[in-house]
Length: 403
Image 1 (cartoon, one colour):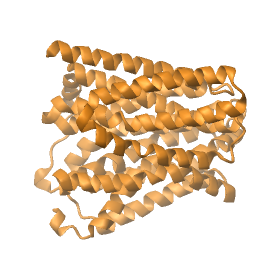
Image 2 (tube, helix red, strand yellow; image 1 turned 90 degrees about the horizontal axis):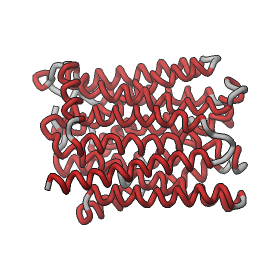
Image 3 (cartoon, helix red, strand yellow; image 1 turned 180 degrees about the vertical axis):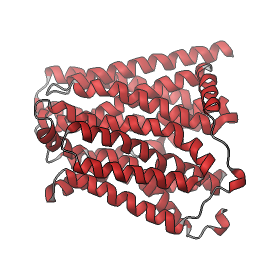
Image 4 (cartoon, one colour; image 1 turned 135 degrees about the vertical axis):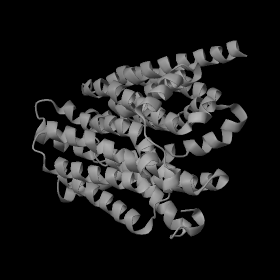
């Protein structure tokens, strides 16, 4: 199939892609308002354990990211995408039915593996049908719609809880996934022709990982991405308990989260305007340096200021954290991909998997350290970004040595 015989308008195709990309954000952010209810029902003795609902999904997503791209090259886009959606829906049902936190966490882990299908395969579908500036245009419109999802997902989650319970969110996940599957099954033909499919070989994947790790710029980019994702996942896991238990603003949380998410979504547009002039490494290094100083200020604020001042400082710090992710991850991917054009597909899967899994593993103890204040999170993220900043300075020295 080509774009010329695509049996849907470009507007419909963009909407479908946006819905596929939104699977991840909806699956994470809609759960945030439910964490207190889940903790009270399933883990009353250790409320912090409910935050593992976020990191378990993230680690499952990282595992799925490693394999879904190569599998879609072997078996076709639709079968892998629909299979992932079915796994996602089945595990959402298990999560709805579960009576223990362990079962919910297991369901969320495998849900993440299933969600990697819509996330990764949709990128491949866009590349199958479009290229160059037209591909960039499709992706830009899809991402513009996608940025609305993190903003409204907590509001949707809170609305569902108000009218049912936290289990109703898992029902929403099933409905969301089934709509996607039906839409794809009815309206989208298989975009990858049989003659263009390639065999899936573990040896090739392993050799690709070894080659990537042997290139200093690629290795450093993956490590910095892992540290940034660790900070991001730690922040997302802890943000609702901090609003609730630290600052007593649980009812306001979805609205603050929505406003901050919408503002931070502008980071990608600012980055697009600056990157051609200043360069990728410079922007990443500058953003991390700024985050280190903002983090130090946040640590000091949690130790010496009153609660109201702390809250507004935390909201600004949360905004800066989300904003600087938009200024760094895309640039780090581009830096790493520069020497890997001969293995772009494998490289994208490996980088996404390694940084997501490592970020999830590091974020787990950060979320569990919550002690009723924002101090453990602020200290942890400042340390992570300081290490990442040091790695970016090392990358600069490596480039200068090569030059």
